Amino acid sequence: MTFMQHAVDNLKQVHAKTNELRPITHAPDDIQRIDQTEAAAKGYTGGMDAYIKTQVALEEMRHNMDRAAGAFMSNCNTFLADQNEKMRAEFKTQGADLNERLSKITLVNDIIDRGNDTRIKAFKSQALRDPSIMNSAQNNVPLMDADQVSQASQSMAEGANQQASRLDETSASAQQNANNSRQIQQMTQIVEEVTTAREEQSRGVEQVNKAVAEMNQLTQANAANAEESAAASEELSAQAGEIDQVVQDLVGLVEGARNRQQSRMGGCSNVPPRATQKVAATSVTSGITRNASSEQLVPLTDANLGDL
Image 1: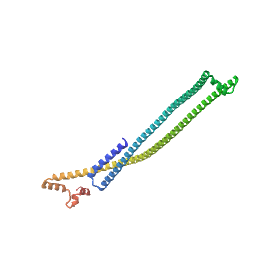
Image 2: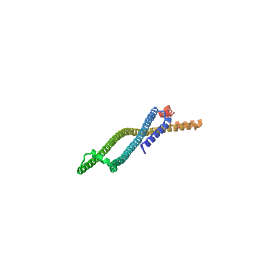
Image 3: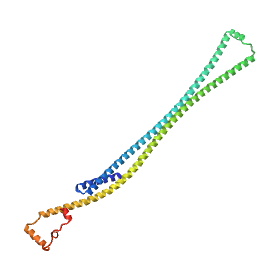
Image 4: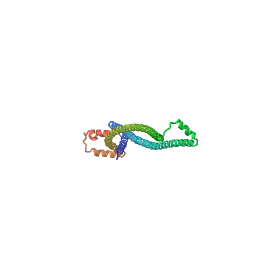
């Protein structure tokens, strides 16, 4: 039997006994005891109500805390999944952008090389068609021998190659700087988002700790109420036993009074005629002296007077 069932049974027993006892007793002490018992039962009922309310509040708080913890973990998982997905998408986008830019740079270099080659070929073809172009070029340019021309051509080729290399290095450096800047911005954004997530997690932990502290307080209050309820239950059990004994005693007194009253009423209804009564009286009083007093003839005690 649980504590609540035992308490309910005690209350039912107390109410049953008090309801049975109150109509048949008129003694002030018994009435006072009944009133005290009913007051104690009422106080015990209030304690039970408070205990039930505490249990309901505690269960609701546990449910709310479980729901809040589930929502918090779900939000954290969603946030981390979103961040991972964003990072994957950004890495894919960065790779695609880098490949696209490298392709564009390569295409531009090819166009430049083809343009230079086309201009050279066009100059040569024009020179072959019109010798005056070569003559004007020779007149405007100092005469050089074959070795000087070869050296100049080599120098120009080396300069062009160096310039192209420098352009490539500059383009690669610019691209690398742009990539580094973008990565730094992305890392900064990720750090900020992680910081925000940590702050949210800290607030969630504080809320969980607060809920746990409140639940501990409710648990302590619940334990105190349980101890008080147990003490009240024991006291009411003892009072119920006392009330049961009082009820039995009073019921015995009432039944005895009823039996004596019925016996007196039955004796009065079966009284014989006067002559017979006189003979009976003579036979009864034959053993009594003439000088006997009225108290000796009909002995009456305080109990008999009380019954009358």
